[in-house]
Length: 340
Image (cartoon, rainbow, N blue to C red; front, side):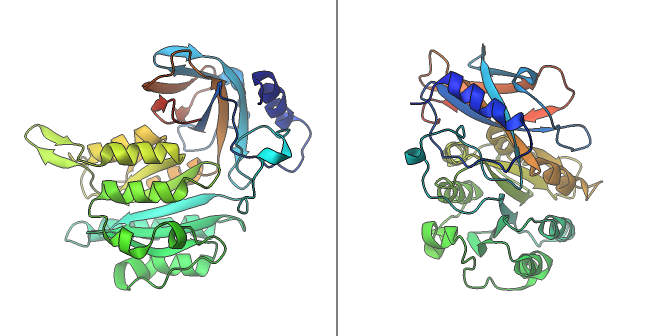
């Protein structure tokens, strides 16, 4: 079993002379908590060069020691344990690169269609900037979940779906021969049975869970939750979705195309983002802003190894703050002893 000292020394080695990034497995010391953190400045640029002393982590309101911090370039292999982990603990894994899911909440009604079209057009910039090992899947939700393409790096296919497919076409047969994730773990019949956006997110998270590293869900959206007498609130299924997303290390970035400065059902979009380590961005006045921020977030992330709290039973609030640099740290909002 790995020791905290080994973790610290191993991850510190990453800052040595330039070298190809090591490969990792998902084995973590039982006394260690792994936290994925994305850090952006006020212009949506990732903050580079941060070390363990630059982070303050609290679990259940109590500060915990940050053992080490490693920057994981968005185009490098996922990082999950130190490079000198025993070879037996390193399983076969898919190719390196970023895993990005576009989940598009379709609404072509008057007032919403223009915002959706504008957001899809902006999203094509992400596809145009993919590295060879990056993989993207595209799904949509209106009254059920639809899989437009499984994970693929075929930019022509992805660009067509964002440009015309979601708005005008019927979804093609499942694609993605390099990593048929959804074809094998989320069949079309189960997807069609997802009648709420909460259930759709849960299914996506459960399909993503076996894959190593942090994942990104770009949630092009306009509403989440339900109106009630006092405003809006979560609906049945939110907790299941939240838990599945955190377990899968899948951060939701809510990119709101609603034609309004603010709206009540944005609260659900904000909540699912903040709970999973993502953020909420509204596009009304600055249509390029959501994708600009998303691009900064997927450029890379930090993996923190921190001490496991002494009282680790149940669910605890988790927060990550910067101690010296100016910026915003995005991490999951809760910790439970069911996750590493």
